[in-house]
Length: 142
Image (tube, rainbow, N blue to C red; front, side, top):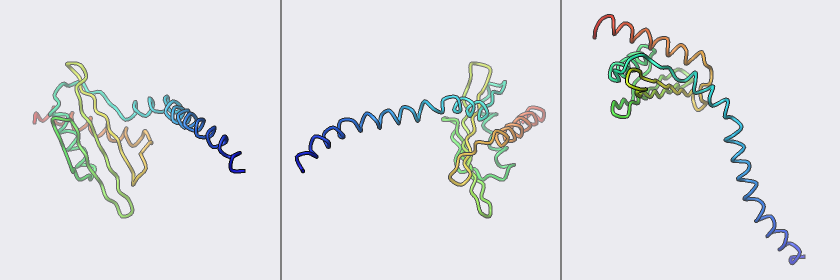
């Protein structure tokens, strides 16, 4: 009986890695459209090449929305912040990078506790607040 199991074990050992690779490939291919849609509502392009102004606007906006900024790195163009509630933790990471010579792209990523925030409205609200902050900064001339 043990001799009969050897060929089955060898066959299974040869076939299983192929199945695992196929499953991994499907997992990444399946959500391609969803990832594009997600990236579109997580990102916004601003008509300014002033990275420092946009970074300051991101920090101000997060603070206005009751986030505590934990880390801001101008060189990398990233800001990480957290807002704690009674039964939740909301984390935001925002990246700022140039897009051509006249624009800046801002991409935000949020997590509610350990789940990614996938509601486009949450990102629209953040970007709306950021737009207002950048407008006010331009008007005041800070």
